[in-house]
Length: 182
Image (cartoon, rainbow, N blue to C red; front, side, top):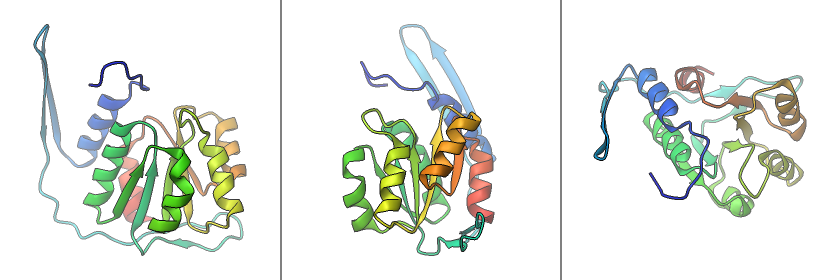
């Protein structure tokens, strides 16, 4: 863990969900003054990745993610790493971005079919960035995720131009199943 860095306290919960979503096993042991030991066992993956298409909302056309590029935007490096790893396991090319000020340049260079963006990016709002992306005519899918899963936050994400909303801590099993089957 990094000293002096605050987070949402979701790391272990996300790891547990991710491991369980892949039919794995997580074992923890801890000793005061020594530290914590984490053992993760994952079965070998044999499934071929499948391109996904996001379901249309309203009269919008379906969004094809066949270019398999996903940009993950979150100021928490642990969440970025977990999402990146799980999506790469499904065959997606991924990039992460923790500096929200570089979002527009990174989007232009990487050309993602999907952007997964946190609502609270510390110095910037993921909702405002979503609006900016839509104003700059980004046509790919945008999924917003947040620790606040109330109806107001969900409505704000939709109004900003997001195609979907995910609540933290992410239900990794559901998320990965959705990414495989949508």
